Image (cartoon, rainbow, N blue to C red; front, side, top):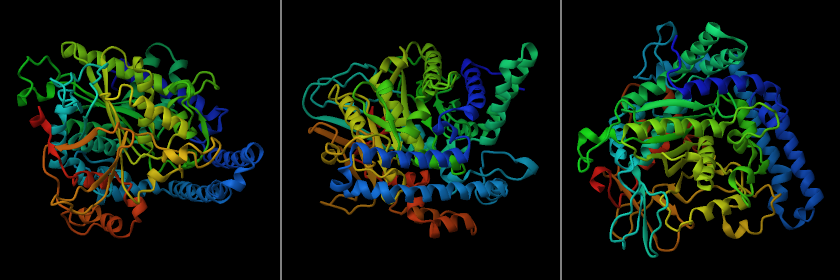
Length: 589
């Protein structure tokens, strides 16, 4: 059995033990709901009734002057309950009838993973349902090319914010950088965005079953002593390593290391993990030799990836589908307003239940630990930290990014916070929290780290929960109790969609919303390679080589767009077609 090789693994096992011991007995319905489906239903219903009662008691005039809020309170929320509740029950019945084994068989036959050896019974190992649309994309030459090109930006050799009128480019390792007034440039790096999207896609390949087994063993560790305790720790660690085997294999093929570092506030659903430059590759690079291909992998970086909801985590549908909010001032500062309860409590656990896992503390401790090691090996470099996530993971990533903007001292002396890229993030904040976040983005005016929110039309994710607070004009008049007082957290929004050619230029294939930047900010899209061919994501699937594949056929022809457009591979296809303003990769140096 594999013994934990570092403190991060030991801390993760201890966290699983705490979660396994406390989750079933929590007094909070939002916590119980992630563990037990009936509690999720009760939590959903109670918050609908509570919202209706608070509006009737504190703001009865809302029913007269705000018809949309009234409609949503009376009809919209019950419809959401039916939708999410129906999905939860459907998946629960499917799992009870052996749906998990059926999905594994389908995946092994029609979505095989080429980086994995034979599974149980000698059959092929397949990708999880989150990657069925285009499983080949993760192991493609295009993925490797994007990751190689992105390394120069990820490793902090290239800034992503410029002040052109400056006499020299800003030093990317200076966390207190400020620029002179005037025009500034923000760099949207297509290769970085694609790399982070690949990472958000592959983390869905963790085996939740193995993690559950590890948690049950970790629960017994405090009651053991001596050799028996160490044997239990080793067994739990071995199961965790097995759960990450698919991700480890993919990361290794990309020339990166990978670790899962926290299961947040539940087991077998959303979690935090890191991709980073392997410690065996990091070394001091002599000045003037940064561009040499042999030194490309010696510059360290860390990418924190927050994983989204597993399609089979049916209880999470109800917990995350509620419209209940909690105060965010404790972790995000005074005047921060409120955040979506399901997302916020996944990261920032309360102390109502005594000894509970502390997700943010666990994440920060692991980041500081690996950053100190990478900094030592690279001659004292600041280690750039990038943050990303898909769907629920995007919500968590943006909240964590907001925390680090509010309190950068959390990251310690070795970490430099860089940009965040979130993919199809749902709404996770009220208008006040969105205001607070947007204020932090212009302090200083040209701060070197921002959050790019990437979205697509007809994807249901960014529209959950329904909200009107993204519009600043409406945000200012929405009461805090309004069920429509929800907004996204972002610096700029990149909306991926096919557009028309204008002014003799090729189609941009994206629309940018950059209201949160000052008026003289110019966004430049850069990439190491020209845009990919004009194809819809469905056309991309249909043209994949091989004989008839019923999984791909069904997804490409019959899956509704609001679900199809939520796939990470759909986003990757559209990101690849963005019109490029300037060349990226090492040529930007």
